Length: 286
Image (cartoon, rainbow, N blue to C red; front, side, top):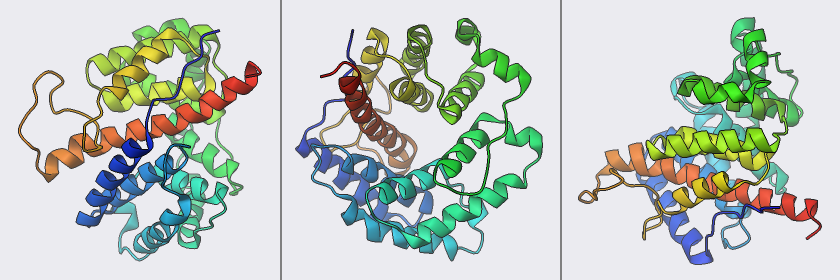
């Protein structure tokens, strides 16, 4: 059986990426940037090669939580709830309870329950609800709509699905923690490769994380992981403004629009890949 390895990263690589992320956070007053940087460094801290530890990030998480709680319009921040939940989960699983972050996460369950039933059936909302439920918060995820439930059982139709629908499918699969057989794994990995070829990195990485978490190793997922690994830059960031032509040194706008999102996705894959590798080692008795 093919064994998909985690993305290769050395202690030095992890350190340079952490420094890059921390530098962006320290220069920015944008809490979305701060949250992305913190989440990515939490992911780096889960890697055995990394010298970064969760205890180093605990105080930052508390500060971020306090800044969100004290913001006059926290619902206008444009922050991804999944990243906020994941920051809290990763810290908690490492033995660090960030009270202010818990208070932020606690607000999400009643807010989700206020949404109309139709919205609660959406993949992204179901994924957020599933993550909250797994952490013990009082919420249960809604069932997907009948048309989506049928789509989830028909992986052969995923190839013709538009990008928005395939992203929705991935969210539903992750919300349900639905194991993927080899066929479904290969289909999602092939679609991820197509998205990466078009440099739609966010969607490609979502599909790859889904395959790594719930699927089976396949050559297509290895090819996609190698594509992401090749996006690494010497200063620790990931990505290029153009995949064929290198531009002049970017300003802050390019860092926030291109390099930070891709770097977050890459280190998230590192973390998920490491967990996936351990899972498969156990499965094959290594």
